[in-house]
Image (cartoon, rainbow, N blue to C red; front, side, top):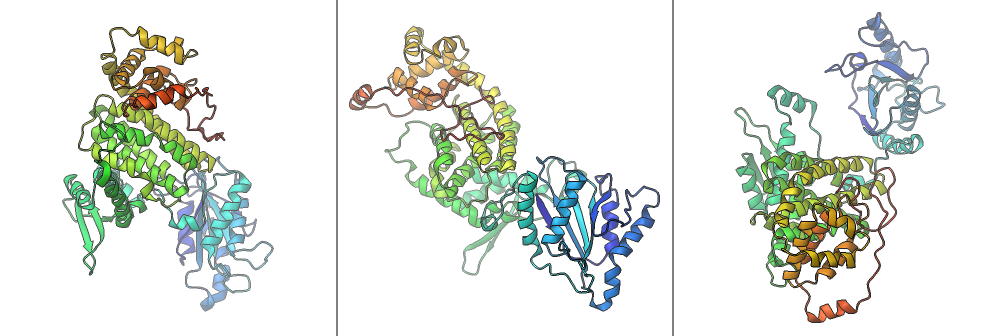
Length: 571
């Protein structure tokens, strides 16, 4: 639940008239009082009901009675107005439940303490399923003002207790909430109306945020970031401090008239200049050493990005909150960068996935970006090397696993909004994968060896319980090609296949061969072990594979610390 206490006003009638009116877009329905200081107050009812204005005047007069009695001693802003809204995923509360919540709120904030006959006069109005408005006049029965200092923080503390008592979504609050990284800021009603008038599906704030995030995902330093913004057609202005250091930036859409400027922090807290500088600094530190010949991978940054991304589920399970947030943040950058590398028909789906995950990735933890240098460095390098036929499909395969892990982590912390956002992300990623995977697998299958019987025997030896199914699946030719490529690079096919199978369970995969293709591809891209290492591998006793039963679902968060399996939302 969230509460919003607006600036005190003086027009009791005006506030009530709005609450009982039809709203700006006919969004107010079944307007009625659910609770008040007095059970006998007149209920004006909907604006078009008979006698509405007469009852509205009577209610205003009753609420303002003590204000009139106090005369010059009444406070300047005597109207206290607080709205209380349930989370979108919460059940619809009854009038009785909203009434109980309203009484607890006026008690907690000092407006009308329970059992105090001199508490302020107040009413709670409901004109929608998901929220109520509480209106009070700030003069007590003894004609003194109420002791409602610090009312916002007292309201937040009471909402935390209400959420637990009513079984509602528990919104994280506390000292860490003030210093965390909230989700993107919502567009105002005026911005939404302007976008509607112009025939735009998105507001200016949303368009700018998307462009800024996309530029940040590609830029390797601050200068390139500003150049990318300009190349995207945005108007960009920077602010320089007297010391000569950069103090901030703002952006605006191209406009025939006077441009409307937005600072980075007004788009989203994590897009402020200091936050961007921290992320780019971590990238620069990694990029400086990325070209070292000691690198683990021999090929493209796409494969490096995949290798770094597939370690994220482990980090989310075992790392600190600040490290986990760093990995979620950089993975969000990956999703924003993907549309630029994808075929035209996938761009819209990938964009929707990036926007959805933006809400799934943001927690209240402050990110320590040093922990995500490997993936961010590979991400920047991807811009300069086109993807091969397997890169995007392989990255999407891993991306689904990462989002499942993020969903599970959010469920364990009871972050229901992030869980819902992760679900939406999975829908879009799976749709994009389903479109691109067949082409990638067909290209791989075209490279399979003429005689695949040897790899079939290897499959029977390594995975006897799955071999019958895998040999009949459409992706088996692509798997033989991947095994042949790994062998050509110096790997033992049986060892690579065994390692791929042991990474995660295959028992719940829709297509075990398809999952194995990408794992073998990633393992085969690594430097092949030397003779000594191969001999050591041969002497190492085989560890029996125990399928994981953990499932990353919102309703029943798993207790296992193993990386999430690819479940019903995958192949």
